[in-house]
Length: 338
Ligand SMILES: Nc1nc2c(ncn2[C@@H]2O[C@H](COP(=O)(O)OP(=O)(O)OP(=O)(O)O)[C@@H](O)[C@H]2O)c(=O)[nH]1
Ligand SMILES: [Mg+2]
Image 1: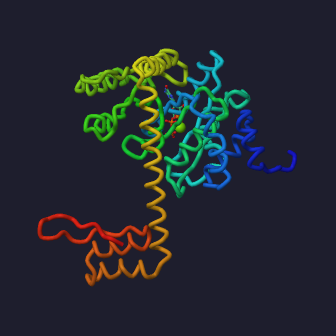
Image 2: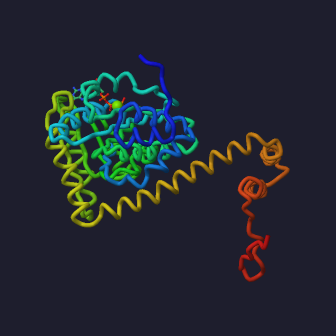
Image 3: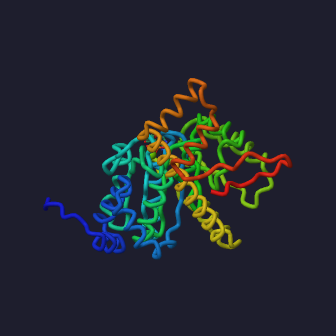
């Protein structure tokens, strides 16, 4: 292989816009590493984004998310759509390109120039999962991918950071995913747009289907009732039917003018989530690096200082945010006049 020429900001943006795999791979690595060049790149290409349709794929470990994405990619490639896939692994700091399992399951598509597949680790990322996912999606969007799949493992809260930007959320379950049913029932997990019950070759698949159905029936108010599809990813069974449901959801959003609204809400929430994550890591770093701030924590622990006084001092010192003065006799708060 030739010596690796590195990209400049301009050549990287040009490569990304042209959809070159090498430029995309480099860009995603930069995103993964919170490199300033990634930030500049996305800033440069952001006006060209908004064309990609993002499908978030989530579900418990090992249910067949990657296998199903691979089968869906095969299906949409027959209709010639260009595709990007980002698998976000919340537990790994860096993946160096691909997890072994994904490499095998998605290998069929590696020679296809219109398909870009990449696993991404984000642990320790300054802006958290949300930032890394958002930036990666924007890179693939700017590269002209018509469809982008965002895969992440989860059945509770953390995956929301990854799929929160998605236009359609596909939840993948398999026979035995009882915890997820409980999470749906309890409202811990948001109701997805489409549900696949994968591994339909398993004898308990029908039972699972009925359980999911009965949970969803508790909620009859929705304008969009999430369809449930039994699939067998490894043999491609019912994959076209699953894709039809994803497209039906997209058509529903577009017909009702909801897609634009959802995207606006998603983007606003992402900006807020990333800003919050950054504020949090800024705070943690500031406290770790400042003996005086650490001393406040010690003093709280030894009961020399009350917790909220410590909070106020930290907020003042780290964020320059001044606490309100105590309320006066009428119960009105006097804002601090710094
Ligand atoms: N029997 C059966 N096995 C399947 C099916 N789909 C996937 N598998 C197998 O299930 C295992 C996990 O599949 P993956 O696609 O890696 O699952 P995943 O949800 O992406 O896994 P993580 O990303 O590690 O959470 C693999 O051994 C697949 O071959 C299916 O429809 N039937
Ligand atoms: Mg996977």
